[in-house]
Image (cartoon, rainbow, N blue to C red; front, side, top):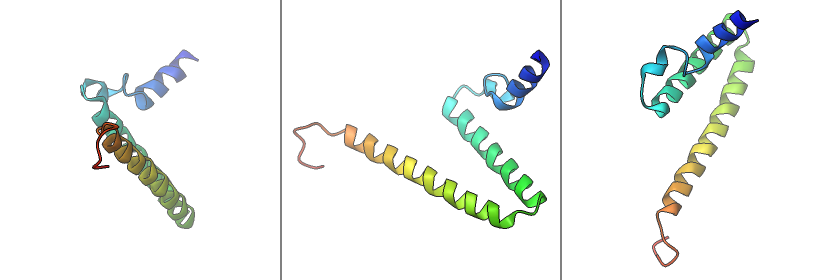
Length: 87
C-alpha cells in the first residue's frame, strides 16, 4: 500500500516530484496544470473521444477563465481604498 502512495506522490505531488526544485509555487502549479492538460488531450485523442474532449475542454476553459477574471477584478478592487473615487 505504501508503494502505491509513494508512486502517486511522485507523479501528482509537486512537493515530491522533480518540480519540487522550482522555488516558485505558482510556476510549479502552472507546470502541473500544463502536464494535466497535455495528458488529458493525449488520452482523449487516443481513445477517440474527440467530441467529449471538445465539450469538456470548452467547459473547463470557461470555468478557468471565470476564476481568473474574478481574481483579477478582486485584486484590482483590493488596491483601492474606500475613499478612492476612481473605482
